[in-house]
Structures are given as C-alpha cells and as structure tokens.
Image (cartoon, rainbow, N blue to C red):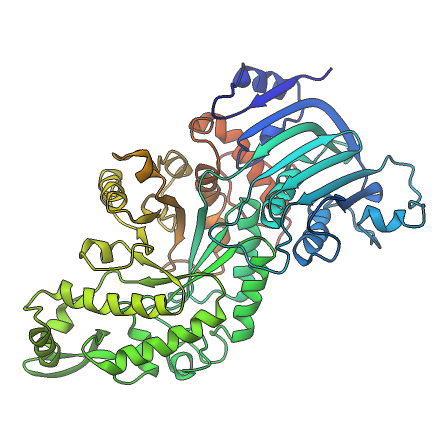
Length: 550
C-alpha cells in the first residue's frame, strides 16, 4: 500500500499533510503536490505506474459529448503528448486508442498500454470560451488508465495540463505517474494577463509563446492592450490610416487581420479568451495621426498651440467614428467583453479649448470636466452595448460617478491594499462586478523574491457581504511595456505571474504559506524551462534540465 498525501478544501481535512509532504520529499518520492496551481482537492499515492511513449494513448469516453474530430481536444492531445514525453522524437502515426482497436489489433509494444480517457458533458469544440464556461474537472490516475471528466472541453484542457504536470522522469529517463485523484475548479472565473503592444511592439510569436505559458498556469483571459499613445499597431479594415500613420512602422510593426485571427485561434485552442482594449478618451495620441479632427486641439494664449490632447468629446463626428471602429472590433474579436479604458484623462487640453468649454456650458456641465468625461464614456459604453458587448472600464470611470450599465465590469488598477480594498467595498456595494489588478503590476521589479508579494494577496479581504464578494470575478496580472519588449518579456513575466495564478485558481487557506509554496514553484519554474519558456530563477539552485538556448 502506498503512502498517501491529501490536500482538500471546504469541509474536507488535510491530515498531517505538511509533515507527510516533508517525509515524501525526504524519501525522494514524487508527489502530485508538484501541480501548479494547486488543485482544490488532491489525493496522491507513492504507488506509481510506468509510462512508455510507444504505448501511451488518448481516447474519448463512450459517453463523451465530444468525440474524435473535436478540434480543441484533438489538437490538445498532440500538444500534450509532446509535453509529457519531451525526449521522445520518433513519429507516432496515431495517438488515439480506439482507431487501433477497430480491427481488434493494437500496435505492437512490450510495454503495458496506458490510456488517458477524456469525457465531456458538452460538445463546445467549435465555440469559444466565455465568461460562464465551466473549467471544472475530475482526474483519476490508476494502473493502465487515467480518467478525465469535465463539463466542457475547456475544463478538459485544464485537466490535461494537470495530468502533464503529474508525469515525471527518474534519473534513468523513464517516465512515471503516481496514483492520484483530483477534483478541481478555479476559485475565480476571470484570471488574466495584460500585454501592452503599443509602448513596444511585441512580435506575434512572442504573444503566442505567452499564451502557451498562460495555459501552463491555467490563466484564461489574454487582455490585449493593443493600442495607446505611442503607437497604433492594429490594422483596421475600416480605417487603415490608423496603423499606416500611427504604428511605429506601417509594414513591420503592425498586427494584420490575419495576425489577430492567429492570436485568437491560438488562444481558443488553449481555452483562453482574448479581450481587446481600445483605451479612450485619453491614451490616444497615436490615433490622431491617422484620423483628422479626432483629438482635441490644445490652445495657448487663445490660439491653437499645435499640440493635441484627448479625443474631442464635443464633436458628433467623434461618436460616428467610434461607433464604426467598435462595430469592426466587435466582429474581429469574438469575445463578449470589450475593454474601453477610460483612465488617466488629462483635462488641461480640454480646459484650454474654447469650443470644448462652450460645449460644456451648452450641456450644463459648468466647469466640471469629470462630467464631460462621464458624458463621453457613457456614449461609448452605449455604443458597445448596442453591439451586444459587455464593457470593461478602468476604475476612474466609477470614481467620476459616471452613469454606466450595471453589467459593466470595473477594473481596479491603482492604490495600496488599503485603498483598493476600500474601492472593492464601494464598487461591490453599488452592485458592480470587479476585476482586481492593482497588486499585480509585475512590470515593476525589485531585487529579491518579489513573487511573495503577488502570492500573499487576499482579493476578498475587504469589508462587505458574501454577496458583494461574489461580485469580484477575478484578477489580472499587468505587464506594461515602457521597459518591456520581446527580449525581456518572458523572464520578467514568468514565474512571477504564476504566483498570482495560484492565488486566482486555488483555495486561499491551502496556499497562504510562501515557504510551502517555494519548492513547488521552483519545481514548476523548471517545468516551464523544460518547455522552452525562459522563466527566470526564483533563487539559488538548478534545474535538472537547464534552458538550452534560444
């Protein structure tokens, strides 16, 4: 009988887990607690089963709503076979156990066959993950077989990732997996990574690699901050001058429609939503290069200074342009959410412009420029609502008391823990859904193990009722691009972002101790390195398989 290690949440217990884990580590035995992020309920044993790539198969359960031909899972089986057996280079003509069995034969192998059988309740193979997609799965590993059951294909993807992390090699290169039972689901539905492709252009390949690493940490939202003041790399079909005049370079530093489709497809196959952000009325200097009369002319001494400020909210043409642009964006990006920005609007240019001031008097805004911003944002939110899209806006929009639909999601980005907890309390008391990003601005770097700061965040530690806390739909790691491009994106992001990933997926009570997390995260970092992700080291040490170069 094997030694058992138990991890559980809720009313379940965790008997002698830490002591037992220490004993297992001292014995040099593999434990399923190497899975990152930590599953909700996990029972593992030291009983282990040998895996051979020549006798390893994926299959669909007979009762599964999805069967062979499911694009998402068929591709995942191919992908995870390579991840599970990274040293295996010979081609395999078939990964499916059932095809070989149709004529009653199996491929010759001296090894015992092992099959991962996947069953899902819903056939959503041709769809996209959305805000209500279930990612729950159950995984049982025993002799000759693993059973993976999920509600959706997206949950099955999470289970395949977990299974891939359970497989390990001994010192002689043989592959093993331990007897394991897991019941798992995410704590929060929204677990995002923001990449900024305006301050520095990120090649498509860098974005795809980030999506791969996101899947390894079970992130499920790619927040694409695609345009901003410095550049407009999105190539619009309707307004091609936006990128031809607003990108760093009109040919090499743009995202074509084909590029965008490639990113969305790559993300979909990994159960990741793509959330585009077109931030306005501020952060839009690059927009003005390709769209005349969009930005507000600034005045000095009663005459135009030749400089421009935020989008001009006083012109009807502004709203016609924005409606046309967002109509295109809503078709290109299939997700139900669009991020509209609304942060850091500098009012000085609006204040200097006599036509804007006259418009404010006409509208009865007096000299309160927060009302002018509110007027603009309310119009933009109404445009996206008419396109059946849910808007996400930065917290500034709420702070300026703007009238926005109740289904709008608010995004907290600034402040100390005390201030963002107060903001969480205010927003949820108003009945608004919230995404928390403030504690996870990991473009900020410091010497030492700053991952501790991201790991010990308590997203629900604010004053409010249980109903209020249900309105916190998740969190987001932000990687702003002032000092980040493709040369340093990956090591700056990983494994620090993975600390936030566990906070957003796992039970907080089980994962509050950084000392217990350290060896697990160190092990996971080595998994990332083995998979070609240039994740930076946590501290002194080594990986069994070191990074082998670009």
